[in-house]
Length: 401
Image (tube, rainbow, N blue to C red; front, side, top):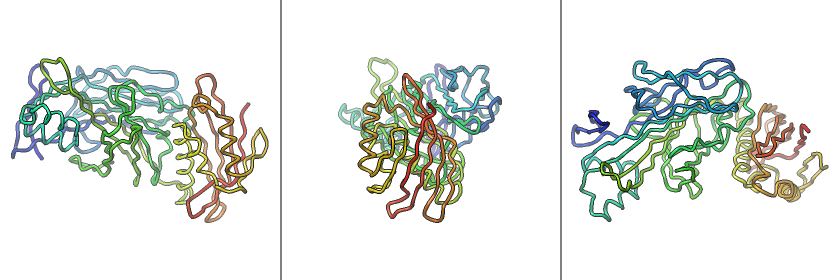
């Protein structure tokens, strides 16, 4: 599909057709010069807009930027001095300490006007069923589409060898935002990344989440799935390198003399590492990632599903030895009776040592980020491979306190 876009005075995009069809809206991504920079270095953050990730067809004008921020455990820092560099808009961010860093940029809203056939094709391609239905119910299917849109792009950076904070899990409060439900820094080939789409701070059901990697072009997304009732969608990561996750939402715009609709395109870019230590290590890591994701959505039973469902399961901790899957579930529910008590769980410093083709020893650290405290400690797990997958058969967990 091809089209030409001419920007008019006052920020109105007018689309002229070639061959009677309209180009699908370009995506915008935030692409760092390094996803895993060393502490104390400066990273280049490039705003790219095109249909071929992660290239750019043209740079956004600096005056179009409403927000350009980098968040670390130390707080939010505004990116200043960004400027056009070729076909990219580029800013610089200094990252002094190890941890997660989340970068975000947002453009000011802008009006685009499309004739009815092109607007209908656009909203049909994006599967914006509510918009299609509303236009039909109002008898406006054959009218021009006038839309105020903005672009929002986030990128997850992993500074230094370990990331012990939960910066990635804190929303920026954007109009439309993609939130990863696990640390992007541990993503490896074969993993699944569950994201939650927030509209004005709340999970939204039924918006489509797309995902892809370098070389994906023309909106031919290898992943295209709607969010569930909790705003979640899960992306299977089948190759290493930079990935993007993308969504779009549109609502009626009341009382505006220029536009009938308001929308936002939002993206998140992450880096996926190669599988570590073969299939067994990758599978073990997936179990831990799925446990952390379950814990962080308040689902203790799903968390305990990562353990061997047997009376022979053992758990050793400061409270003594607990035996059996049912006993462990009861222990966790007793120790963490509320969502606030559960906090946000993260694992770090993982070491996975195979003990044969169907067993592994796992060492690591755990941490809970809670409102009033941040407990943590170390753990050692013995895991075995069963027909249903890898499961923890013994857990020894201790606290730093």
